[in-house]
Image (spheres, rainbow, N blue to C red):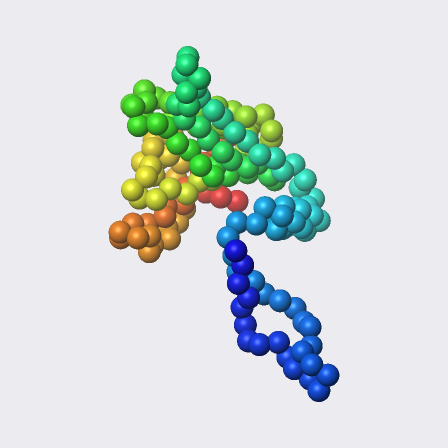
Length: 163
């Protein structure tokens, strides 16, 4: 569902003048694909890096039920973790660390030398710190008085600050 933004269309002596339109709505997969395509082209032209790729890690139990997983992106030597989740009854079994290490190993295989992630204070910034990530910033204002914590890790043992 989309709704138009802005004022009424311009009106001339011959009637409304068509012009650009601005709309706001819910998820739009076609728009997402187009924006992704345009930004990839722009970023590749600006940097010369064209090694963009999606990365996923999935853990399932013997019955095929999801234990946990991770989604990330790799580009220009950086692995950006988007989502990491482990089901509640498996969180003390080391699955989060195994999933994260598998993603880091795949990122290294793809030529990445660093990784970044954000985690709300009510989620897992301590988990990432235990796995070698260092805090690089915070964005306050998350509902409930929480903060979004930004973390970084060198995957090659180099400096722990972003370049």
